[in-house]
Image (cartoon, rainbow, N blue to C red; front, side, top):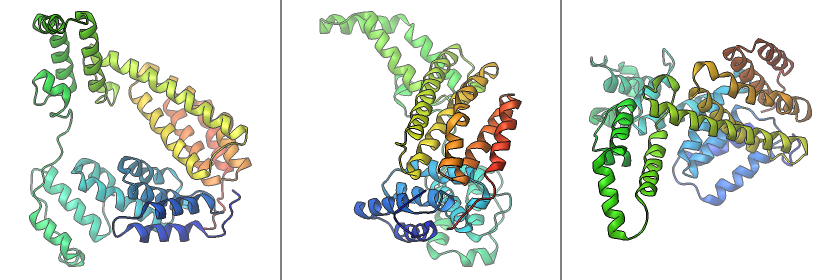
Length: 369
């Protein structure tokens, strides 16, 4: 990639990390560092993505920052410096603790955390999730923690975030429920939408307002409730009710259409020379992979090859463009490695073999940061 600045990405990452460490960052500085990331001469690597995540967090885009920090792990470890890996993991662990997402936090931690800070978070997760109290932290760990962390541990009583449907949602209030799994919610919704009481209530309101029809009101209410329920769908195996499966099929079709559109737009931009800076290309790649993952998760086992065959368009042009035209070898390697894994999962041995061979052509990386 030909940039206008000779500053290595490692330097920009270090400056962004220092800038975002102590709180609020002026928007003009966030924009300035974003441009510096776009202009570096180095190939996209772990330090680039971690810096992007820190800037997203500084803009208040927590979910986007989380997606970027998680995507650092998609790059080969040879393209991720120790400081970038530590930054990404530390941010994700701290974010999960701040949100009370202790299961996600525990999944992020390695089997044997090697730093006092990670052992501290593992200790807090155990206090929330495990029936038996965890053993106390080692004295050496305890005294290496900041005073604020020790005080927080002493006062720590935050319950874990409930797993499953949000009991305070609009849908739950409509159904008069305080909890339950998705199948129970779907059953309650089906019963409510078909109840005589609801039809009488809507007919009465229609008469009083002097406009609208019962069928239109019922259809609008159904669409609102189904949209609310559809946000909770995560994987096909959990859908134990016909309504949930119907919603999943519709949502999956929309996701595959979105995947199709995004891939066409990205490959067209690469082919006609209008591709954005590599940082923006990575953002789009992150969005494509998340769209793909949701489509696969909402597919019944016999249909999981469909999203995969749509995603194969990445090998048609995008991965080769990264490798041969842009010489973005770590990025290209991540694309081909992903396609190899998904080809194997979909039973497409031919595409998996070709993707593995393409990934090998990306090695060794030429990193300067």
